[in-house]
Image (cartoon, rainbow, N blue to C red; front, side, top):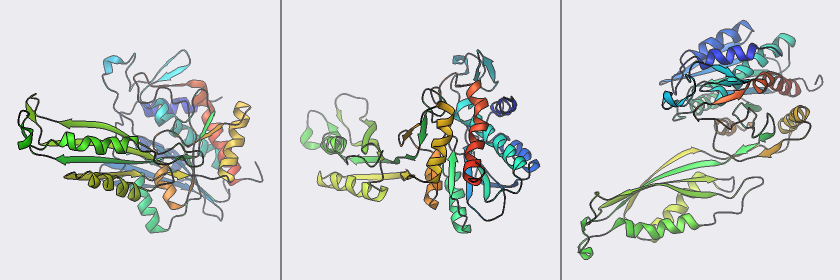
Length: 381
């Protein structure tokens, strides 16, 4: 196999693109794609760079390869075996921030796209790449904002392949066909501060809030949906008090998150939660952040093509899952697009010494090219 994808991945890792800084990654990739015949549009919103590259204008479906060039901070550099932004290969494994999440997949997308259009310059339909530098950050001015623009333009996207690290033990053993929605609440409960010896002269927001929080945390929201697990609520932060042991706090703040399946939408969950808070008589203010609604890709050409390609690689069909966190596919799905996620093993993402097996990395361009050919050239594939 060619080491072209390894060289490009290393070049991307060497650019310190900590979210939302793209550090020139997209300009580098746009130059390659333009030389391959792609039309490139740079969409910058705020501090976020987005690249929309397309090839083909004929009749047929639009297939998008979706990725991000930003990475999470490395943490203490001294904890790494080697510099996180100086790619290093040890025992057949490439180390560096973004190796698995997801500069390796982005490099493989670009090379697969180059090879596909070189072999099929007059292919039907349209092949596109959409890259952002805001996936690991607030996800406001990245794909979310680009999707709003596409909706205004009437841009149709039939299929989307996201290169998130989806595999568990070996490349291609898991295919993501959906993701849960994510909804976060910041709840401020108001009380009256006072001395612990005189509770009748105070109102303890902790005591008032605990029964409501217990009800929310113990609720069975649903029994799951298709391959989705049941909706869950997790309390992630609680803060109250002055630090003194003899003072009843005057306020309490709680942060909780719901991961939910298509049985719900954010608006209904917000109503249900606030109904509980009101029923317990809380004096509160709540702020909701809707990270994204759930999406699910039913059986069809996209899942079938991915299943066939991954079965060819591993000799057995992949697990088809809707687990995990969120990805930018949640925004593309709002356009009515069928979305899947296929990428390298995710064992080290966001960790010290993030890495990807070189053999897996070098197999990715062929994997993505096979998917593109099955979808855009079904009679040839």
